[in-house]
Image 1 (cartoon, rainbow, N blue to C red):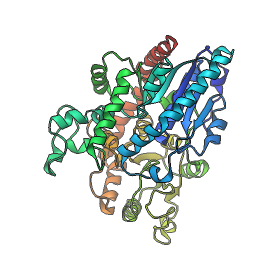
Image 2: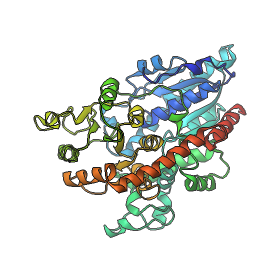
Image 3: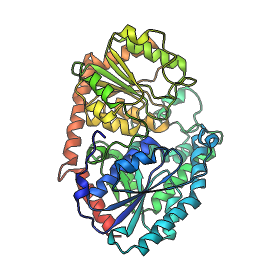
Image 4: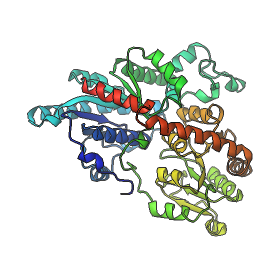
Length: 470
């Protein structure tokens, strides 16, 4: 597998084992696997617990991470339940269904470690995704300390967990269309429209969900953030104020200091993407990817296609199966569309995103503004066009466009002329060149924070000492 790095296997074990429990979604699995590889490279043995839900590629993980122990459990989640669009209902349900099987799985691991005479089989803590809000209570029953991994940005998470406060202060629920533009003074540069609550049939579900996540963090032994101080200094300051007694470890960007191979749940069309990029001129290509979850309708898909084509810029577009509602793949495209482009466009089902963004031909990234994608774009100095769909993505997009000023936030209805104009603003106009200068400055700060003595390096050293103290 491209990007594989086996050097960390040569590091002697330190006699301690960490157990990690990722949420079964691509944007949560990858950071957890990066963290696992970092800890393994520091001498820890690693056990990964995962649900059967969304882990159909277990063989992929065991083949690419043979130095980790993988344990799965049946979550009892039906296909109907998994397709529920109400996010609060979904996460509440999957947490409830996983309590007992997770407890049984953890008990079995701990029992085997006691029977095993090997020193490196002794678990010292559980590192859990923040959205698994039941895990601390279960781990505490076994006297196992819990550390929470935050896979979203600091500012996005703080805005998310502030829903109850924002409701008290009458920002939420939104009263009328005009109030959407109201600045949220507690979280500049956000407006009310940037912190919209998850869509749900019962809004109280969201507040209970948020409260459960926050309660677990308050009871945990620490929080790991996939971010770095120079990028989110103000947000980290607020996090320290909120979680006064809990150590916080901003050790990101995790993918830049991890020897891990990519943990994609989709097959990567590596050769096709990279070989096509190799034929393009520097900074000329728009890379388009809306992540692993979002779905769009056929009309929007066609507007995107024609807008990108009319921009006259080369493009690499990830259209994963299921992206377009009611279509298997790219069937809605007009007959002869790709031929008309005469090689100027390349459409793939998936792409090795980190390698794509690092390629010299890529000059812009049209993204759904997930936190991993945002960080990866910053790390490679690629300006963004932000098309957010979920609440945390709205916050990320606002920071990209109005705080770091390294991209544009597309707040308009998808329409081909506007798409064409936006792409050209980022790719060829002076505005885009200014964004490129600013994002290269952020990229330099990433490089510095990961060096010995840098802020993320220091946070990682503190985290290692913290885990070893258990």
